[in-house]
Image: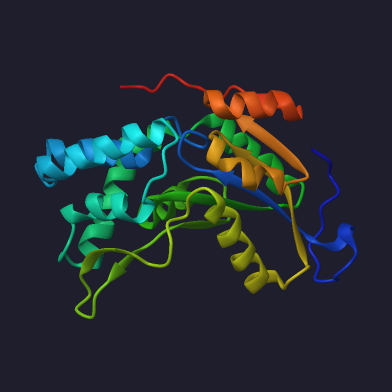
Length: 242
């Protein structure tokens, strides 16, 4: 990592563009998948119906085999556990979930990489398919500056629904959402992706857009792509304390 990143709004001069370091969350910044652990907790606490749990499980198998899937639908199945409940109450539940289950899974290597990127002058952004209150809680404890994650719709009474606002931040949507967010914050043409970190073949679009892509404990699909493109592969796997 080069110590040459400075923030500015001067279009056309790469040395003066805002440098973005973007990190995926699940299986990159943390060990494992926060939605999967959330489903386990909801099932064990009997907040999620078994039928919905089975549907989510079948969806997960199809996802593993790279079959086309409805990303919004599965998030609606998870949030069936919270449908009709006050936003503040659900957000606190998800914040507690992060503290109790996910915090210990945050990889020290990810935190260190984030700190190094910040030292170089990068704005560190986590882009995630996970639910917004979970990633927001992580941002309060870990060294990243901003987050873009999946938001669920709240109705006129302030209660959660099963509907995703916009599209889930998954696959190619990560880069689309990041571009939209950065254009709005820094101005079109005034920023660039200096570093990108991802673990899954669905992160390829995001990795391709970075000057310096890094592949983290990848699945088999991304490991093959990384070898073909000579992308650095990092092993950030950790043993999670019980």
